[in-house]
Amino acid sequence: NPLIGIADWFSQIWAESLGKKYSLENKVVNTGFTPVSALGATDQHSQLQLYVQGQYDKVIVFVEVENYNSQIDIPKLYPEFDSFEYLGGKSINQLINLEKQGTEHALVKSNRPNYTIKLPEINSFTIGQLIFMIEIQTVFMGALLNINPLDQTGVEEGKIYVYKKLGRKGYINTE
Image 1 (cartoon, rainbow, N blue to C red):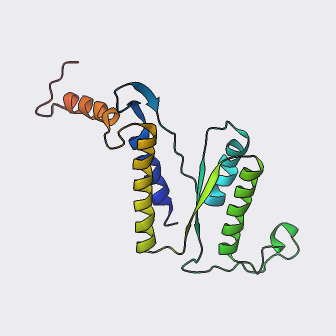
Image 2 (image 1 turned 30 degrees about the vertical axis):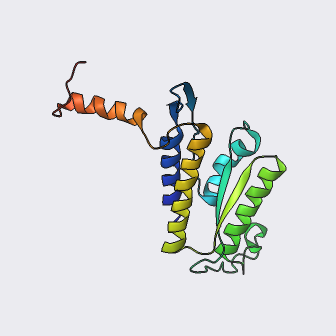
Image 3 (image 1 turned 90 degrees about the horizontal axis):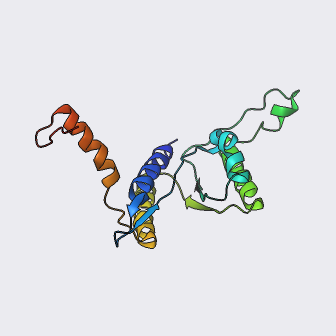
């Protein structure tokens, strides 16, 4: 799935940019979110229970594709098994979209906040638009939280520790 890399990157940029100890006025705020990337029906069965009935501390973001680059049809196999028969003649694309709709339905029914980013198709242009939108969204959220989303002081502490322990020039090991 070409979008799973985007989901992982979103988790990284959202956590690193918005997980901050200090506000712009240098007051302790300890703010941020815990982003989790999930892939469609694969993670629906492992995470949806938490999202539908767990704590009210999550916003679920769906990315939906209107027109897939290819279509995979599900063959009509095993008509004697009710658990398979109904899928025959449908497409994987249709199944993916319906799984998303089912997840969305369960979230809405449980009053869980969610929204959908709809891509007309997956290509370099729409992926570029999605990346840009996420970057702007991250900076905007930083402004709403009154923090600097462009520094990473929490990450730097660990890097400096390693540099000192490994003897990198300019870093004195005092520990």
